[in-house]
Image 1 (cartoon, helix red, strand yellow):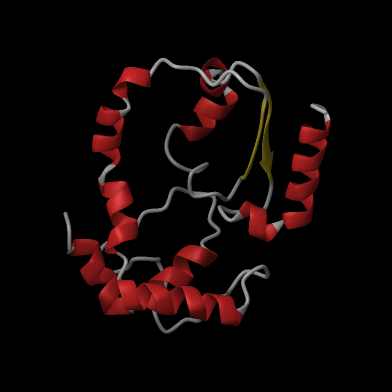
Image 2 (cartoon, rainbow, N blue to C red):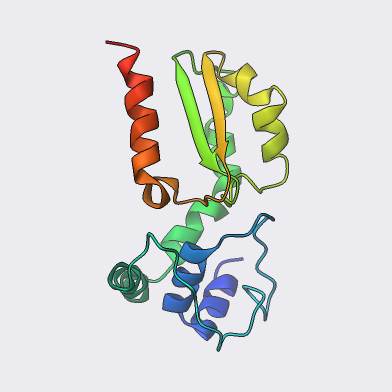
Length: 163
């Protein structure tokens, strides 16, 4: 419902909400219960992850305070419409070599059904040339920022096979 979560974020401060989302590292699906969005008191500090400097965090928070967060939220509100628009391709496969990496604390990895899809055949069915689905322990959604050297090496090793 447009406006509901925006009001919740406004109540705690859009900047705070952005910092909470950037710092989210929980191995369970993200649920934002009304009145207790992130499950802890709002006077508790947000512990920024090591990859996120105070300066960068302030920049992100300030940008969302200026623009609001509705645009970002609308992406999720539009899921059903996106499925409808992409329906003609629902059985299409990605037929190029693929190496996939994500963190076990990624918000997407913890979504209901995602682990089963990745590890029990669904992903391989849709991406038949999938070489590996690598799930890295202790890493969240911002994998390329958390472990840039490891991700760069994975990319380098993967693409080096094709020259």
